[in-house]
Length: 634
Image (tube, rainbow, N blue to C red; front, side, top):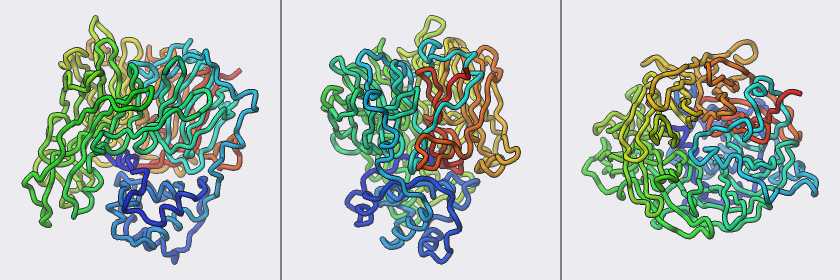
């Protein structure tokens, strides 16, 4: 678990501990990123920032916090979610009064350009161009692209060839008001793409960039496309709920709580998938952030999986990575009783193994003692019942939470390392792939330790593993992996945060059947000219963190430095490289568009185009807010 996930795991609702501030901000228009001028140091919000935020956010190069410049692109609604009692920074903001929180948000958003919450109105297609073809087939069903989550498309599926990928140009771009992170696009064969941004789920005509329909939904997950009763549908998580929409019109079919029956599930960070006649919901409760409050009884919360009926949202089954936490007999240095076990959240996207009727998930670390055998693990569940078919723990004793600073030893009272364990924060943030090679069905996974794993899909036994460097808390493998035929593609992030180990950022490939290394591409910082200032922490943030996508035998990867790098899977040679950082000309000119770091689910393809969501300002990276569509040059 890391600050990438913790900031993303913010509660959407304010909860019982909220205030009038939440109600006021919820009605505030969305804000577009803008150049922020010098804000008066006498503003009361500046004092609140120094009191509760500056220690981390003024030093993003040495911490995993968002830079101040990234925080200033966030809308008041988003900032309020973050610092609310139920928000991920709630413990850090606990010392602030309600007025100080109001002042802080006013200071952070001073100078932002106001954009309408109905920002999609100006982008709507002509009435006769808004149809979604009933006969359209699914090209990319969500984050995983295909049912095995390979993130791979043939030339025919993508409408793009390897040769065309070598010559791309921007076709159009859209700026999302207040958007600071990226989401992927799901694609239908009629050229309709579904993506999220600016508090909307939108259906976009890929050829022109116009919007067919828009649905209000605050989500940072890639929508999933499925079919229910012969109708194409789109499923998206919004806070703790699942919304099922008609893909043709955007009309809501049903909305249901995606939590376990006891409400213990936490946030839905990994995006949902369709499996048989169900929607599979991964949940990421862990107590990882509340541990920062030294008075909290650390820790409670754990990962879980909920299966809902795709037809009506009714509850089918649920799986928990561990039982509810109880007092574990440990007491912190300031006399606070500790609880456990906790953690093993599911941050990643599940995959459905149809041949064996299994749902496979990957998990995060424990956040308090005792450690469990379900943390840092790959777990296969019976898709009909949720019962464990097999599990493999890749790393034991990884017990960590956000009160820990293992690198410097400046650990808070609730840091579980003080009670034993390693605290490496080497969980799985990437979902697994189901592949076939050498006559075997294989489950592939990538871990933040830098490991690539291959397991027998039927038994969970290890077939082979490879390790690339020593990994890091923000990589090795961060958001996702891909497969192309007989090759496993592993992106490695490894930001240069310290000198404890030699970072290995780049793209690495292995033969799926044997684990033999095939080729690799080493990333390097590109800080020439204006990029030195345009890219936040340019010299340290240049690895491959976003999940790659394969198109016609070429790997499309992207860096935290905002570059798209396309590699030939036969040789590892670069066939194209282009930049997305900086101002972008957008279709909706009333919203300022800017590209930045490319991370998370930011790369998608289909309908003859490549889609890049550029701008991800967490962890000292470069903020931005644009979706850019690229087409082959004529």
